[in-house]
Length: 153
Image (cartoon, rainbow, N blue to C red; front, side):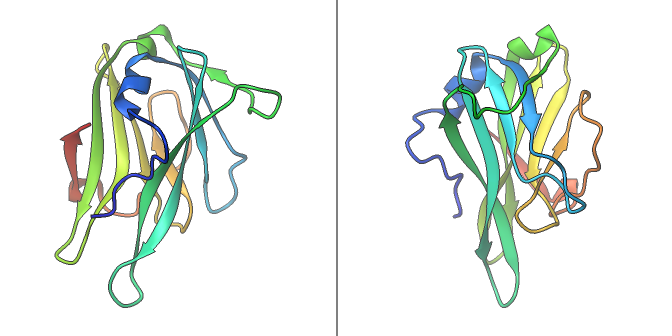
């Protein structure tokens, strides 16, 4: 099982339940986005990116990495989110289950308005994909969305 890399975080769910006030991404390249920062209501920032793991043969699978970072001059400029994102109702990890491995490769967050914010590993190596009502980039997940199993976090 390739679990989320959370280092010293005690609870991703606890952090996200406080609400999300904004986000930022790195400058997209032609291959996509490599990092997203979620600005939380408690004034902290959750940085999310991916790492890759070999599975069978030449195949690889991505899983998400989470780091709590300081809000300082090195933090990216925040894009504010609507107030609905301060009331998080559902947090799910998205698993890729194969006969040879299981990987925690995505996160889906829902708010009290029924909107979803999805972050998954990309088909492009070391990139992530974001799907949300406020985000207007391309969406090319590593696997078809029907391949992911949603599990409450």
